[in-house]
Image (tube, rainbow, N blue to C red; front, side, top):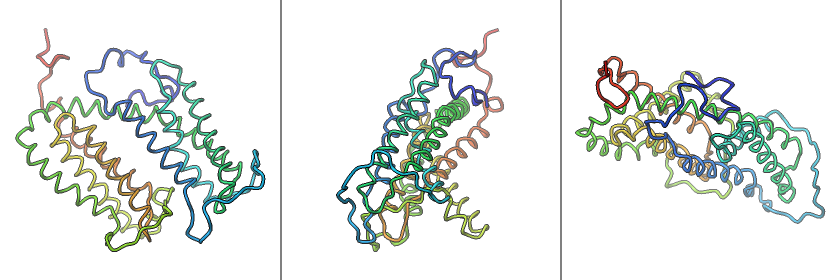
Length: 328
């Protein structure tokens, strides 16, 4: 896949021969949508790292006799280090999306994203001095900053990969999706039926009879609980969830036509994140990052399978950039 090498991490200018000119396809996600998504992710993480913890009967906040502007370097276990690292990966990713500008040197955005992430982590550790259930430590700041740097490095690579997938889908699927108007009414009806079924399958069982908890429970490490299952059960559950989101993506592609690729991404992302927010506040349940990752895998699988079956090199005559036959 071209354009996904190390050079794209610090280069945001279209200088190669294949990327010049105005793209003929709509963006997979507009910059405003990406920024709102980044703000939502940052809000959830700030709440998760500073939210109330009252399960043991202790108060959320306490008066502080004297603030320490430089918390101690307390040792942390490997589980805490891994959790902090996973939590701040999306923080660096989100800050890079917020500050990134086309045509500006990539290292400036990268440095600013790390600085903002480190500042957020430092302020979080200062605020945790007033929280009895939290431990303020500069070790967490160091781990969080390293994780944010990895997330900031991954942001442009992920964006280019998403654009490459969308370009292939636009070239291979869009000509066929324009001709699926007779199927759209049935696809919309099937989507309305399938959407609540997928939501029910992802949410905890017997949800109406369960109580709610003020303290959200979140498993920040993906697949942490899944690896405790026997391997056959793990394979079946993972395949089932990927297939659910892939089927939802396929119905959205048929129902929305040529705009189905970005709309399907927004739909499966909203379902995956929304259900996990609900799971976090349900008693005896926990939110996790596994379902959003599997939702992205299901979306990617459906788009790739659609591109493989609708490859224009095998199913359509060669056309020029304007959609007509090539000129001699």
